[in-house]
Image 1 (spheres, rainbow, N blue to C red):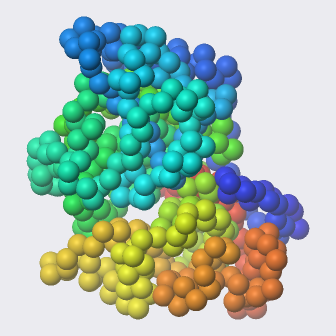
Image 2 (image 1 turned 120 degrees about the vertical axis):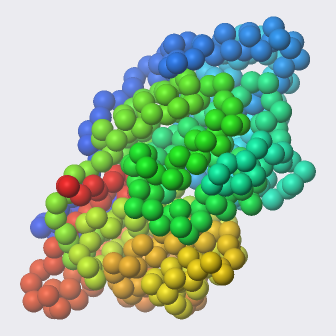
Image 3 (image 1 turned 135 degrees about the vertical axis):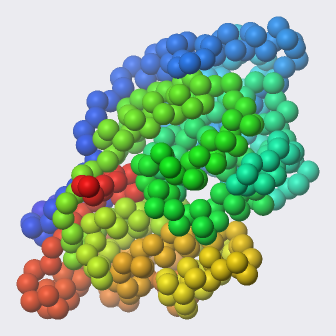
Length: 454
């Protein structure tokens, strides 16, 4: 046996895996040292746009009472908004030094269709120097029509309703993280606006069954990806004065800062990320072990960890997925639970036929169940061994996958649950195959992306 680290972002622990296990980590990448200096340099020398200081001064010359909005991600993304690598304080500090009063700056949390962040969560996420300025902080509410305004139409999505506070601001700044994303290719950039600030109804076309059925709506693919292309169209319609995004390594450490034009800066961050997040693979495995990382705050987000296993899995293989859920609802919203139950009852093939039918009425959150269906098109539902303590045991009667606690009913902690579940699966597969199973481990969970050789 050999010990490996299971790093879930919020917690981490070591587990023992068979010596024959192939391990597929992300590539090595140099870290950014003197982070604040590098962040301020990026703001002063952005890609294809004016420096932040000049942008502020230009807006103030046009209107001394100009309002600025800084869009921030919610807690499902490990964006460094505090600490030595914190990007938010340098941004706000530069804006204040350029002439804006704190009362002229608003922070807008791009929750998309996620729940609103609690005040204490926001306080804990932000740099105290920013929080103590007393800036107005607003959660985007995709279901409040009073806070939405139309910015026009797209051929794909129809009328686009967007957050009023963003649209009506004079200076628009986006911040976020560029990491792999199993629908949009990568996060960050345009996603802070679309779907981050959209009305719920406007997200439907972006997440429709036909759109997500595209073979290009996958991790680390932008060209020909309809989710990315529509999000970029909407973001350009909404406008953005500067985007500030970062890239991180597998330990959530800063590897790059990319400030500038919405599209140009995002593309630079994408190229940087892909250079070390893409993992070339040419083998298939009977068992793939992975985890849901920091983003796996609930079962809804856990699909991102599950889908990274696909390129490595044999047909009818087994996936052992480890999750630590911190969300108050460890599964997700009512519609998501409804769609999971439909997936479990119908199976992936009939489920897809249902949601792709012209008579189907779109259900919010169906998109995440559709992502799970991708996995179950390749492996049986009972071959997903789901290791967590946060989801109630009885809930697994309505969601696909096997609760690891039925295998290890007396496990005292997550480490023990994972190790004993792995031992059980190893013995079961060895018996069925007549030899030791081929095993792969993805130490970086949803962040390192196996890419098959063409």
